[in-house]
Structure formats: C-alpha cells, structure tokens
Amino acid sequence: MELESIVAYLSNKTILITGATGFLGMVLVEKILRVQPDVKRLYLLVRATDAESAAYRMKNEILGKELFKVLKETWGEDFDSFISQKVVVIPGDVSFENLGVKDVIIMENMCTEIQIIVSSAANTKFDERYDISLSINTFGVLHMLSFANKCLKLEMLLHISTAYVCGEKVGLILEDSTSINKRVKEMPRFDFEVVEKNLVNEKLNELRTQDASEDVITNTMKDLGIERAKLHGWPNTYVFTKAMGEVLLSHHSKNNLPFVIVRPPIVSSTYSEPFPGWVQGYRTVDSVIAGYCKGKLTCLLLGPMTVMDMIPVDMVVNSMIAAIVVNANKSSGIIYHVGSSLRNPIKFDDIRSFVVKYFTKYPWINKDEKPVVVRKVPIFKTMATFRMYIKIRYSLPLKLVNKVSGQCFQNIYVKYNQKLRLVMRMVELYRPYMLFKGIFDDTNTEELRKITREGYIEVEDFNFDPTCIDWEDYIMNTHIPGFLKHVLNK
Picture 1 (cartoon, rainbow, N blue to C red):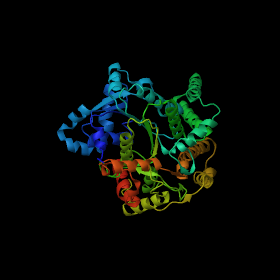
Picture 2: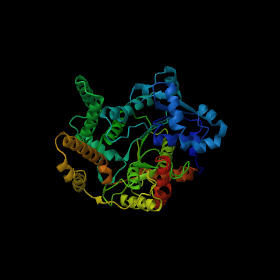
Picture 3: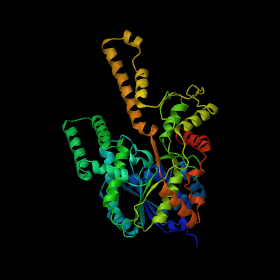
Picture 4: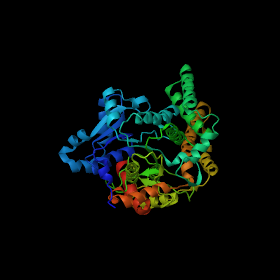
C-alpha cells in the first residue's frame, strides 16, 4: 500500500489559527511555514483594534521571535516577501461574534477559503478575572463554532484544551468527557450561557454602582472565578472555563462538523524543532527552576512521587498536525491526551534533582557577581504542614514586635499579612499540580501514532512519541539552558 504524506496534505491549504501570539500557536505557525512553504494561506487572528495594530503584533510578537531564525535563514532576503504571500493577519477577538472581524469582505473571504481551523486562543492564568476567562475560554469556543459552521470548505476544526480539565482526579484519566459530563449533570442548573453570564453581569453592575476602583473590580472578579470553579468541582478559573468550553463545543457542534480536541498537560521547551530549547515565558515548572537558581526558593509543597506530566511543545504541534490530517472530513469528536505520564513518566522529585545538579555545576551569578549556592530545599507533603511552615516563616519577629508600637506596628502587621496572603494564594493555585495523583491515558494518541507510523512517510518529521525522551538529558541539556537563554536572558 502506498504511503500518504502529511506535508502533501498541507499543500495549498488555507488555515485559520487563533492564539498565534501564544506559545503553542506560534510554534505551529513556524512549523507549517517551514515544512510546507506551498501552504496557500495562514489567517492569523490577533487581538487588536485595527489592521495596523495587528500587523505590529505579528511582526514583534510572532515573527520577531528567535523561533523563526531557521525560517529566516532559509529564505534570506526573500523572507518578508514569502510571509506577505502566505500570512494574513486579521484584527479580531474570539470573545465577540464573528470573531470580532469587522471587515465584511475579509469575513466573506475567510468563510469561502478556510479549510482548517486551529482554535488555540486562551487565557491561561489560573486566577484570571472570571468575566475575561469566560469570554475567551468558554464563550470564545461558541463564537469559533459559529464561525466554523459558516466555512463552506471546512475539513477540520482542532480545538486546544488542557489535560487538567479533569480537575483533581486520581488514577488513570481517560481520553473522554466522562468526568466533566458527570459534574455538569450534578450542577443545580446547567444553563451555562445564561446563568454564569448573568452572574458576571450582575456582579459587574453592582461594583460599578458602588463606584468601585479598577483594582477592586479586578480582585472581586478573580475571587468570583475561583469561587465558581470550586463550587462546581474544579480547582481554578482556568481549567473550569476550559472544561466548560469543551462542554459547549460538544453540545453545540453539528453532526457533520469534523472536530477533534487536543489536551496537552504542561507544555515545555522544544525538543528538537526548529532547534532544541526554545521556550516563551514561564511554563509551570520554570517557576521552580528560577526560584532554585536564584536561591529564593526556601521550600516546596510537593508529593515526592508526583508525576509531572510534561511534553515538549514541538511534539504537541506534531500531534496537532497529525490529528488534523488523519481526521480531516470525519465527524469524530475524538479527544487526544498528548503527554508523557503514562508511557514515560518523570517524577517532580527527579526534576528537582536535575535542577540542583545543573546549578551546582553552572551556578547563577547574582547582581553582586557572586555564584548562588543551591541545595535541596525542604519538602512539605501536605497543605497543612506547608501552611504551618509559612505562618512561622512570615510571622512578625518577636524582637520587632517589642520595639515598635501604635501606627508603626499596624503598618508592619498589615504588610506582613498581605505578603502571607499573597504567598498562600499562589501556593493554593499551584497545589493541585504539585500534589497531582492522576495519570493521563493516551490510548487515542497512541492509535494516532500508529496510524502515522504505518500510513504516512514523514514519521520522523512529525514525532510526538514521549518514549524517546531521556528526561535527564532533556532537562539538563535542553530545557534549562533554553529557559535561561530565552526567558531569563542569561
């Protein structure tokens, strides 16, 4: 049987990508342009007020990144011309109907031309304002779905979710919506589009009537998001609104709409493409790395046996492209967990050891030009013991209490309490992942790997098999150096 070609499928295709300024979306854009220069067009929906602002964001926040250096070297002086022929940046916003696209002609062209939609726009802050998270992560999915139904040539809608929509489950977590649907049925009234939207509007109107400051509004809406998430069984606003986005996608998609959902866990730096170690921003575990190397991490809330499900970003992108090609024009609704915890698990405690080993050999040089000495910090296995430690650490020194009084003491007391609350809030946000006890099943993803191995010719070019990762080598020689270079600028 003659093998098919993934790259050939992408030839002459018109693709819409939302979230292209994000980590995952950006790597996808680079990959497609590099491996298939004969792609017809990439529409990039960028949050901006007008075409000029959108073009500025594309130039500086996407193409201006070092990620594109290989592509620029390939095309040389013709790079700008190549981009102008292949990429169309569109000012818009998934929070609005028609994706916020105001130009009627452009909208008509998109609906006529687009064959593939990659829906990766998301707000990934764990405790974002509830109104903002809802508008992007939940209702943004409905707006995308509405647009997809207008696309006359649509072959595939690929939606990026997160493996952690499962909440705080224990054991093997299947590639389906069973746990989400069960919780939805337990909700007193699941009319999400009405109930939650009305709740948000009422709270905002109440705050504005009280002439509340922007800071008060922001903090209140953040607290509301966490409150609603926990009420329904999710640990934070991000995973709750992403889960509800999945629910709305399944509930409102038509039978003839071909779509798949890709759920990555923690996405880390590139494994090999376009070069090893490229990363943008802090990727969960990087906060620990930064704290360790600078000597600012004094303790960790951590289950030593906790499996940290990580997967390099280029592997996620390879899986996305494979999922599009294999499932195109099929009404599947299949879900893919693209992670490593089942087939090549790495414990968080091992990552901690690698980090200490690295910075013992290559210490961070502080502002005084002195190397920072690193060592394994104490681990607290439960939230109760961690709270006790933090309260002791951030309590007012007795000698200070004896020396000051009156308003001065009150100011110090307020400051200490604010710091304590901030620390505990951050710890509570990360707690579900530092103590996570689930393993993500990837049966569907393994089947996708099998199909691409047996039916397509570019297996090596679209690798997303986590079993090939040597975690010590990757952390020590790829991820940490990449994080230092591209994020901490060292």
